[in-house]
Image (cartoon, rainbow, N blue to C red; front, side, top):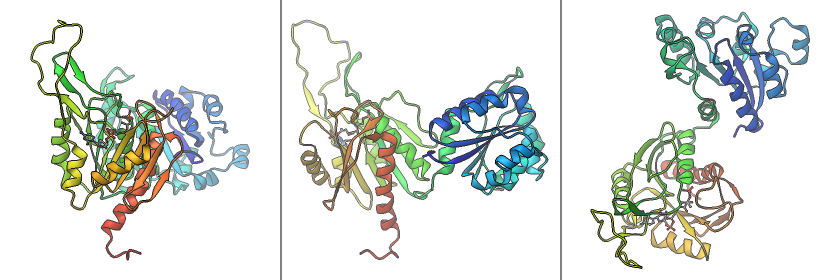
Length: 406
Ligand code: PMT
C-alpha cells in the first residue's frame, strides 16, 4: 500500500525522535519515498545524517538554504507529497500550526501542502492535558488533520501518564488508514477467524492449526476501508485489530451463538474461521486417566455455522472459506452451493505458502454465478484486499438500486 507513495516525515524536538528513526525505517521498507524535514530542536536529539542514511534522501532543515532550495524546493516537495506525517509533534509545533504560523522549514512546508496530514503528538502528560494545548489540538482536528493519540506509560521526564508516542508499527497502521479510500463506509461486516477448541477434559481439547491471520487480515483491511467490523475470534495469539469490535470465543457452539447474535445487523459475513467439525459427546469433569493401551472418544458433529447462516440468509452477502487437501475446486464448489453462499475462497492447505499458520495464501475465488478466479501466492493482507474489492462491488450494487443492473 505504501509502495511508491511520497511521504514527508516532519520531525520536531522531543525525546521520541528516536522512535521516528524506526518509523522511517518501516516506511522505507514498505516502499515509500520518504523526505524528512527536521526542526532545529529535533536536531539536538538525533542528527540529520541518521535520517538521511535511512531514507536515501537529503534531509531538509533550513528555510533559507540556497543549496537545499535549488535541489528540492520545499514547495515542490509539499506539492508532490501523498501524505505528511508529523512525528513526534511537540506541543510547540502543534501550537504554531494551530495559529497558522510558518516560521521555519517544517511549518512552511506543512502550510504549503494539500496532502492529508497525520499528527502524532508526544509530550509530558501535564502538557498534554494543558488547556491551551487541548484547544490547539482541537483546532487541528477541526481543520481535518488526522491525529493519533499518544499512549499511556512512563515518560522520559519521570512522569507516568498519557503522552508517549505510539509504537512505530501502530503509526504505520494509522498511515495506511489515512491513505486508504473509505469505499466500505457504511458497510457492516462480520468476520470469523481462528480455530475453535472442543474440550475433552480439563487439560485436553480438539482443535486445528488455524492461527487467525487470514481472518484478522480481513477484519483489519475492512476497518481500514471504512467498514464497521465485528470479528468473532477463536483462541489466537494475535492482538485484536484496532477499531474492530472483537468477540472472543472458544468452542464451535460459542462461535455459533456469537455469529447468530450479530447476523441480522450484518451486510456482509466472511467466515474464515476453521471450526471444529466434531466435539466430544461428553466433556469429562476430571482428567482422563491412562488406563489402557488405546482409547476411544465418542464424538458428535458441531453445528455447521455457515450452513445455518446460509439457511436463514436475507440480504447478507455470505462468503465462506474452504480448506481442502484434494480436488480443491470441486469440493469448494459443493460447499458454495450446499451452504447457499455468494462466494467461497478456496485454499489448498497442503500447498507451500498457503493455508494454516503462514503469512501468505494461494486462493481461488469461486462465485455463485459460476465465475472462478485464481490468484497468485500473496500475503494474507493482499488476499484480504482482493476479497474486499469483490465484496465492495457486490455491496455497492445491493445498496444502490438507482444503478441499473446490466
Ligand atoms: O487462520 P490461518 O492460520 O490464517 O489459516 C487460514 C485458514 C486456512 C484457516 C483459512 O484460509 C481457511 O481456509 N478457513 C476455513 C477453514 C475451514 O474450516 O474450512 P472447511 O472447508 O472445513 O469449512 C468450510 C466453511 O464452513 C468455512 O467457512 C468454515 O468456517 C465453515 N464451517 C465449517 C464447519 C462448521 N462446523 N461451521 C462452519 O461454519
